[in-house]
Image 1 (cartoon, rainbow, N blue to C red):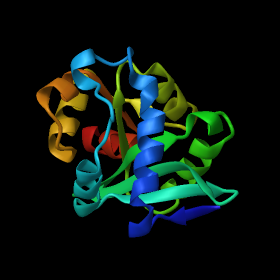
Image 2: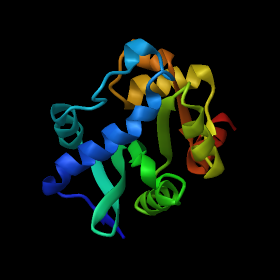
Image 3: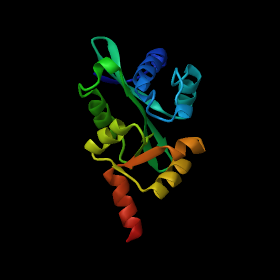
Image 4: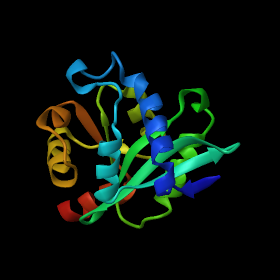
Length: 170
C-alpha cells in the first residue's frame, strides 16, 4: 500500500533513508558520504521546506519512501530509498509512478553521478539526463545544495520538462 507519511513516521522514514543510503558508501565521493546519511534534524528541515514523503507499506512495515516537492514552477522527486532487503521488488517503481500522478508539472530528479544504478532506474522510467551546463543551472535554481554536490550530481528530467525546453527553443 502506498500512503502519505505522517509525523509519527519520521523515525521510520529516517531508518529507510539511512539503510538505503548505505549503498553510497565507497561509491560517491568520500567527502560527500557520512553515516548516518541523514539526521532527524535534516529530515525535519526537508519536511519544513515542503518535501512530502510517501511510503510503500507492506506487512505493516514501511519498505520504501520517496519525497515530492513543488519548487517554483516544477516538481522535484527527493530522497527515494528502499530498504536493502526489499529492493528489486518494484517498490521504487510503484512509488515513482504514484508520485508522478500527483502533479501535472514538469519533474526533475537529482542524483549522485557515481550512483549509476539510480540514473539507470530513472532512465528506465522515462527520465533523461540534462546537459552538464543545464544541470548546474537547475541544481542552483531548484535545490539548496553545496557547490560540491552540484559538481558530483546529475539531473534527470521527465518528458514534460523536455517538451517545455523544446517549446522555448522553437
